[in-house]
Amino acid sequence: DTGVSQNPRHKITKRGQNVTFRCDPISEHNRLYWYRQTLGQGPEFLTYFQNEAQLEKSRLLSDRFSAERPKGSFSTLEIQRTEQGDSAMYLCASSPQRLSGNEQFFGPGTRLTVL
Amino acid sequence: AQSVTQLDSQVPVFEEAPVELRCNYSSSVSVYLFWYVQYPNQGLQLLLKYLSGSTLVKGINGFEAEFNKSQTSFHLRKPSVHISDTAEYFCAVSVYNFNKFYFGSGTKLNVKP
Image (cartoon, rainbow over all chains, first blue to last red; front, side, top):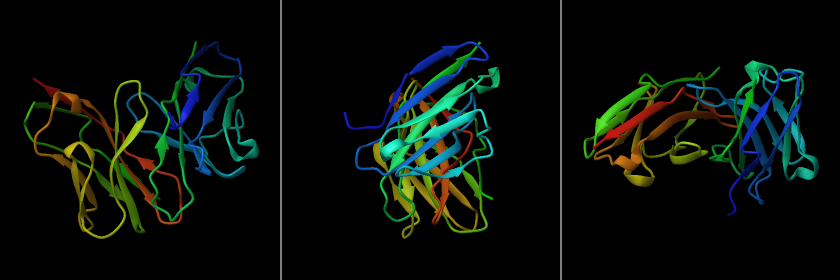
């Protein structure tokens, strides 16, 4: 399967713990995106990478959140000192670098539950 | 700023009936428009997209959508739905030269036998 993969698929943690999620994009895609989806809502943009450079961050991404994409391949999203409000589905997407308007290919998501 | 409104949070419909899922957007600049489908416990899958050209676009699984610039709408339609179309549908816009998508809140399509 050559789609976007995300690990883990589910994560349950206690408030105050740190968690890290991984996303492996489609291999030839140099653009990578993170979104957060809460119950009853559509995905909300968090951050965007082109190769290893993080080019945009949403105001939703507080200082407890950090994302990296070393070497421009896989990406990690870390949440420090988790709060109950962080419970959500975290989606990763990738797209090739062509003209604007490209579709984004989404992974299955990581569902985070903070107790 | 851009925003997307999906007026119907849930749409129940009987199998083989036609369906329309509504999407309106707000933007001060030209946009690209997308419809994605999300099946339970799965990621989003692209149904169709409008970039330019013909305002009627056809997608996978028999879905189509029409871009109406004056109404700032991009409604999704299917002439005859199947049980397997039961899923959540998201409308999204992106702005030229920007990469992030703005999504609507989704419409749950429930196809009944």
